[in-house]
Image 1: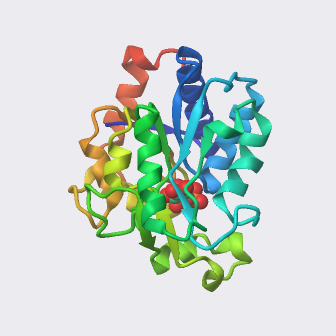
Image 2: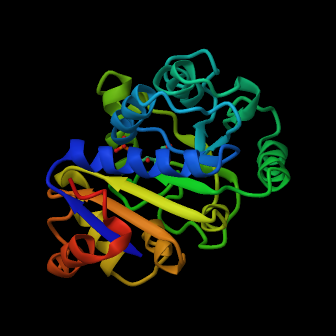
Length: 259
Ligand code: F6R
């Protein structure tokens, strides 16, 4: 795992957008794993402004609320159309979001896993982190080998996402379909972005704590190609910041990304 700390949220999002852009340019048929949430909005703004060619790319989103129709402004399909798909030249038929309205959620989860396999897996998976340490909607005690399935959301997550539902956590759906931790770990590269003080505690547990199903994001420590990009606030509870900064300032891989 590599941890990169940028001075503020905007430069952290810019670094993530530049890394995604580099992968899309290097592999025009890239299979992208995508995340929603407030942290990613800036990344998608930046990607949309870059004029990249997404016409050969395919995408798989991490999750979708259960029981929220696609056309509802709270659905993650709607979020993706608004923040990214509607602003770049990706083919709609190449974009995939789990169907949270499927009558048989188990069958939909199996179909989603099959689609990812048929695409020969995800090249680059974008991730945010929840205040309870989730990735996707893998809430505490999600098995580290879990696959796409329905998951009940914690009170912490529903509170975290309440702002999108008029500030009322009770209006946040109680369940979601989410890729499992095991599904996420199979992506060939992982890129997590976290910004703001609200993420500092869960982020420190994920990066410097023990690997535990209580903090799904700690499973990222198992992945051989995982980058974690933070602003100073999200990094504030880490103990090894000087080392992470030294690596970013000195390792040749980061030349061209430092300014
Ligand atoms: C969203 C997702 C979640 C979010 C996380 C952070 O598709 O899978 O894990 O990435 O909850 O959300 P924000 O960015 O809104 O703080």
